[in-house]
Length: 151
Image: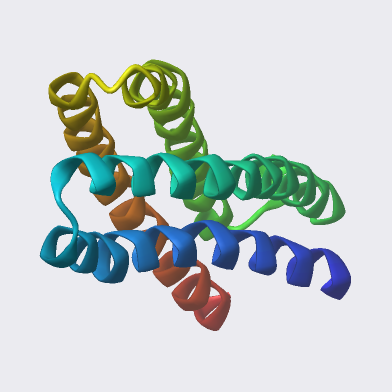
């Protein structure tokens, strides 16, 4: 069970840590030193790489999380904090799916065609949704740590 908890934790760290770095460190630095076309190209390259890792993290979180629930004897026997983690995690996955398919795919096409205004608008939507997912991810980590301490 410890191995699957570790795998689950590492996948969460990759996803949530990546969002934290992008939102809190990379975004302000990019705004400070790059003009909009270069900034949009940078984000396109960053997302292209980061989203590969997020897909892997999402798959790993889902598989390891469901397996851990199974090891606990099923969802009916899992502690309440596990239920909360599952619901928030699923919400994060839905938001990520929306970010990728509804926002990033068009963003990528706008950048490729140098439609900077449209790309900037899509980046604004992505930024807001990443802020929501980052908050949910940090909340989930808090729920996990506090839940394990109280269990």
